[in-house]
Each structure stands twice: as C-alpha cells, then as structure tokens.
Image (cartoon, rainbow, N blue to C red; front, side, top):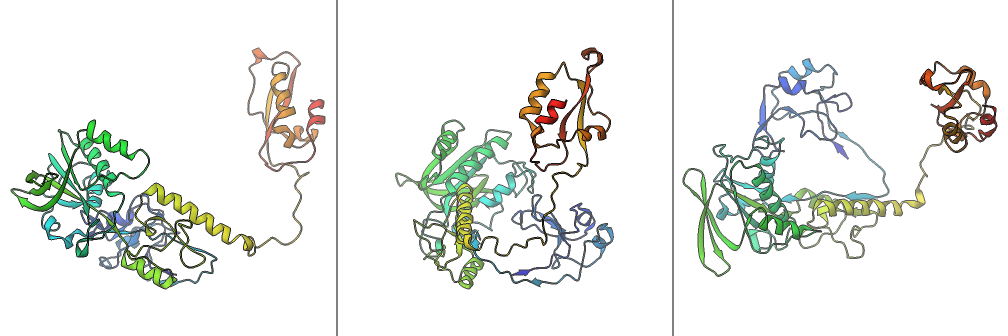
Length: 433
C-alpha cells in the first residue's frame, strides 16, 4: 500500500487554516466540480478524514509562507511516498463508481453552455458549503433561474457509445430531491420540470416522495425523449423533445441539469484485476444472489456501488454485511496475534481509591432514599471499609439547615471515582451507618 505525500503531517496539523489563509496561489477546486477555486494549501472539505490540510505541489510555487505561519511545525516540503505491506485475513472493496461524462454527447451542449450542468455540479450549487453558498444561481450570470429542466437517463438505459444499457437506480429520486430543494431555495415561483422515460423511484416510500413532489409542490413531469439542448438568447437553453404522442415540442429554460448515471472507473477495474476478482459485462464485481457481498475470490468482499448501482442506505447495509462476512471468515484466528501482558494481573480489590464523593446530609430526612441507594444501588460495588469515610474531603453537597434535625447529621457515601467491582457486599457497612 502506497501513502502519497501530503506535505503536511496529519498527526501534527490542527486544521487551524493559517496556511491556507496566507497561500497566494489559486487552483481549480475539484470537490466543487471545477465551479470555483481553492488555494494550493487546502483541505478537501470540512468533514474530511483525516482533518488535516495538504499541499498541491503541482500548483504550489514554493514561497514558504505556509511553513512560516504553521505553529505546529507540520509542513514538510521534502515529504516522500511511503510503501507499506500489510498482512490481512480479509479485504473489503468499497471503491464506488464514477459519473458518466456527458461531454461525449453533443446533443446536450454540455461544455458548450455554462448553464448546462450535471446533477453533481447542481448538488454543489445548492450546498451551503458550495461555490454559491447555497444561493440558487446559474453559473453564466449569477442570476436566479426562473425555469430549470432535469433530463433523465443521461448515460443510462442506452446502447453503444451513448452510454450504458443498465439503469443507475438513483437518478430519478435525486432529481426529484433537487427539484424540491431548488423550489425551496428560490425567491420566486420556480418552474421545475423533469423530462423522463420512466420514473423508477427505488426504495421505501420513494414513490410517495415522487407523488408529493408532483401534487403538492408542483414539479412538472414530462414523459418524453430528448432530441437536443441548444443555446438560445442570453444564456438560455432550448430543449427539443418528443412527448408520449410522438409530437415534437420545444421549450426555453434558464438552466438544464443532466441526471448522469454511474459507471465503474478505470482505476477500479485495474484494482479488481490485481486482486484477482472477476467482473461482469458492465465491469461491476461478479456476485450471486445468495452471497451478494462475496466475490469470486475467497476472503475478498465487495459492497456499495461497486457491486451495482444503489443508494446510500443500501450501500451502508452491504458494508455491514461485508464486515460480518469478514468477521465470520476470521473467527478461527481471532485473538491469535493479540499481545498479552506478562506477569500476574494486579488485584485492586483492597486498594485505597483515589477519591470519593460524599453527601453531608440529614440521614433521617432522606433515610428512605439513601437506604434504597445502599441496599439496591451502586453501593454494592464500593469498598466495605468504615475507615474510608474518615478520609473523605470536604462535602460536595449540603442539605439546608432548615431540613436538618439537631444531632442527626451523618455521612452517607454515594459514589466512587474508581470503577472496579469488589466482591464483598456493602450490607454490613450500611448497617453500621
């Protein structure tokens, strides 16, 4: 396994952001799909793991400012790739998928018009951490769109060079979600239109989600086949399509969102080849219905969209199944490489605890409460030694004098800061109280 250099030590980095604030270089932000810029010293996104910055050495000019301002001393320009060899008993491949590239299809004008975006790009436009900070704007002129069209099955359910023959399973549902969120973000009445071949809302209650978008929120659904998306006017787009009756129509929209499908990336195919795992005709991992996470090689499991197009809940479910299958395979070797401490374990049963919590109270007024506490509560696990009470510190809680009777104040032990259980019961000690 090769660890590529980050040039900032993740163990030392505190993610304070000082290095990024002084960096003078700007580069394309890949996480935001190229819709904005980032610094050469950057963190991929706010929830990245590890929570540490890295340096893009391709864009970096070597000014040294980030090293000067880093109080933790985490910047290392001489960082090198490191190769490690790990001995494992099982492998789970969760490589995911990549999105279909719609620039292969000239009919959608992707790349020719900035207002034609993919579903992932539109997702970043709606995000509060995205390039527009969650404000609904089209990339061309930063104006709020009045009409947005979603085109379904881009790269899916087709043949030849136009895409893949399978359904990507999540595109219909995420298009509905984006249309509903866009209508919520819009300051005016947004016309959200989805052009589809068949609505396939996989998953529990997703069909009701589809009906709610259509009947309650007014999202338009047009069953059709798209002929072309052409630039029209000042950043607008003209969609030519044929409806269910075969009649040719056209409409003008401010933005067009292409609902692109999934496909397996070249790096994932190469990884499967090196691992000796067989793939099907669509380059997804080959499994069977009764062993959905087991590959053709024993000890290697697959989950998520590498097994086939699916949404996040199903991917998480398969990840749990793959972890369980790996655990079952390794049950015979469990604890075989565990290092045990030498010597006899030290008994702490009669050692003095480092601290006690006590209550200085009127025992008569709370007798019922603390007798229950002593007999049935935590006290069974505390030290049965009267001398412990003489070593307690200043009481942490007092009962008001008005509730106390003269001469009836007593100490009552209510807890210990030391967790080990002790064999002797507390009943003799409670009787002495």
